[in-house]
Length: 263
Length: 263
Ligand SMILES: Nc1ncnc2c1ncn2[C@@H]1O[C@H](COP(=O)(O)OP(=O)(O)OP(=O)(O)O)[C@@H](O)[C@H]1O
Ligand SMILES: [Mg+2]
Image 1 (cartoon, rainbow over the protein chains, first blue to last red):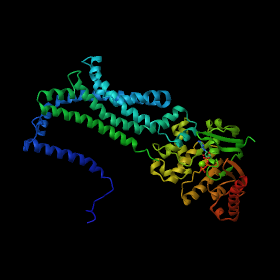
Image 2: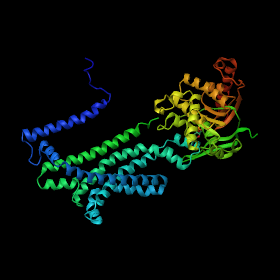
Image 3: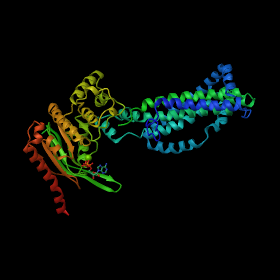
Image 4: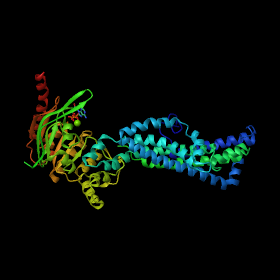
């Protein structure tokens, strides 16, 4: 009887619940979708049936994977470049006060600009056949969350730890390597997790604004316009897959690193 | 005279704050001989931590001269003549117990093999042999404190500085660690400057008890304990011990009366 009285249970859900719950919700949505489109025929015509989408995925997975590769590469290149730039600038901002004063308003301004909106300009700058404009957009988008988090992380060293290092006659470089950097690492990975999703979205949406005729975003736009909704949705699934994989990898990294941060 | 571990003459420290200058310490004359155990005791805010931080060159004195083994405090810090343990253990959470104990050695370029040997010795010394590969968050507060003490001893310093290292511990653990500390100090022959709020602790551990008083922080009395070299649990029950405790208590409580006269 008491086993059933699970009303206000304060315990967090078991790990398997956290994995199974989203899958169950996803399957439930698919089931409702299937019901609306294939059984009740109650959906608008532009919404294809999940079965049709799966069929398209099966028929075209080769080319879908190829386009996923293009978009994923753009996102990853942007993520890497944005992250490296963010780490370097954050380290400079922490070390030199004036640089911090210069960068803070700039990053604040950058954060409110819809970055993908400048893609047409970049495409004109780098030529319509270059992926560079898309990678550039992904890099700027990824830069902001990494910079903000790393900058914060580099300032989290505790006074007692600084005293320990100083009492051990550590040099400035040693203090950075043994204390400042490890303290900032969990913050870097939080920034990276956020940036990974943002970079994929930026790289994908940038494709809507021109550039080479490849990538997930280009395909979605093309097939949606030409009335092949099921194929367009198959590509959407591909886009979701890229974002999901990156998110899972970075989340896992974050968890591994954040395990030892208390005390 | 070069035998002195600490030689402070007319040492004072004034902190400049937004609200004006705070005189934390005035006219402190204190000598600690090599191998001697000296406790600093006094009400909160009387400058005990400040004095210890000056000795450790974590802050610098405003007036007076301060020599550690005949050198300026800064030189002694760079030469690693002292080891220090703070009220907070201040362990690096991303390093194992062994890694924390070996931190000063690693900073000074001691080889891996030599570090491993030293960690084994240190772990045995503080009774943590089975915990060398654990992380600080897997240890109790008392165990963490012992790791911090081991870290302070890593370089075999001739002077050990301790700022209320047992402050947050229960009475049982505290008495146990007091016994351990006197044993370690005797074994290593190091001089100890030990800050505490506890009269019995100061008497049990020390060769001399330095009584301080606040506003401005200064030394009011220095009481030798003359309890001999051995510190056993039986000592805690002895009449001489109680006499010394009473003497220190009177010295401490004399302070407010003196202050009342001043006003
Ligand atoms: N960094 C600082 N800036 C300004 N004032 C300070 C600073 N550090 C200490 N003080 C002041 O110096 C005085 C002595 O401080 P200190 O920490 O040495 O006291 P304490 O004897 O260790 O006290 P407690 O027993 O509470 O630890 C206090 O009045 C304190 O406010
Ligand atoms: Mg203090």
